[in-house]
Amino acid sequence: QVQLVESGGGLVQPGGSLRLSCAASGSIFSIHFMGWYRQAPGKQRELVAAITSGGSPNYADSVKGRFTISRDNAKNTVYLQMSSLKPEDTAVYYCNAGVLTTTPSRLSDYWGQGTQVTVSS
Image (cartoon, rainbow, N blue to C red):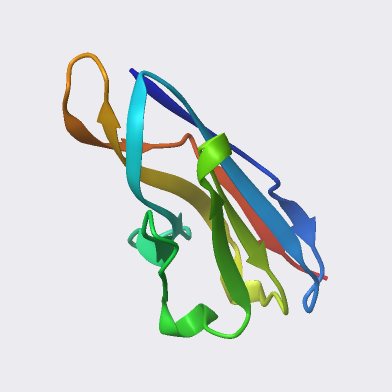
């Protein structure tokens, strides 16, 4: 089994910054893609940013230029640096990873429990 544990959410004023972290642990052989999704009340979950094992990022148009995704493969951790935050960024942020496990040998999709980000004055 694999666990994804997020941290770093909270309350921040508009224009502020937050850094989210997500650490993967368990029967990991390798991690392929890692990413962040978010879900606001009454809305569908949407992709915020993703990064390949080689470090190539992809961003939703709504966060380009404000958010930066990165990963530390040695620590099985992905980060999301969020700057110039807006009230519309308020949501529960979920970590997602495609993990090849050791036993059984299988590529599966895993999710974290979510962390709340609230942007408000």
